[in-house]
Image (cartoon, rainbow, N blue to C red):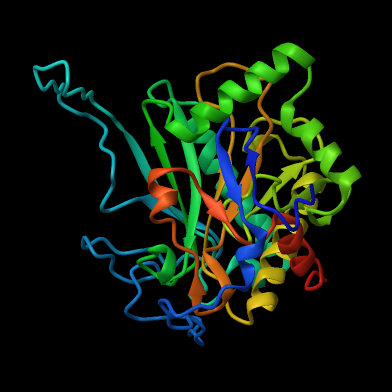
Length: 338
């Protein structure tokens, strides 16, 4: 059976979940929602931006006149340092307190400079700063997991154009890294090696889903990708935390990340919106030799800068589905990698 021609389903080795792949639907006509192209020219400084240096934030505090990366506690945090014990008093209504910290990390003072367009040394500096922010939260006894992520573009719900990441550090292990932990732990107990390192070697041998690579990192469209141009970037050396990169490894990883983001931008001829996040090991003080650090990048675009994918209908009630195969998506991206 040709995976490029017939419907089939693929398993996500990290979560144990399935995705339906329907290559023959790629040619169906589109008469649905047309989004507005998000491309725009931004100033290097915006006097109305809550994140630019020296400006007042929404809650009234003022940013310092910073240069380079800058971080602060989110003024409208989704988590608080303390939470009253909650109980609904019924077996059917289960709840529990959740505490934590939400940090905002501006990549630089520039309102118009995103990760993809930074000079390599600027991007490395931003990622090193981000890893240090993660490390400080990771070491806290009251934190079980520190999730680093970036929402880019209005289409992905980003409320401010100034390029920035966030870290939500929670007192419990969230669902997605929890599923990944179980899969990686099970594989490590059976094989004595991290699942993702062996998976990367298999992907490099296959070649068809690789976007770009160097001796430090590999970017690929995963075999089980849900979003049309979803990618995953994995270091080629075993490491579980964001604080384990040497300077050379971080430079190599940053190179692959930037080349992947720029390939997406060239493919769609726009500043592609996306959600991106790093999955590092749990923050429980354990070594976690089974865990391999990796980043997920989820652009929503499907056919053009104005046509996006929706997870609706069968995908909400049954399982995720995609038309374009991961192999075709990777091939399209490779043509735009420089």
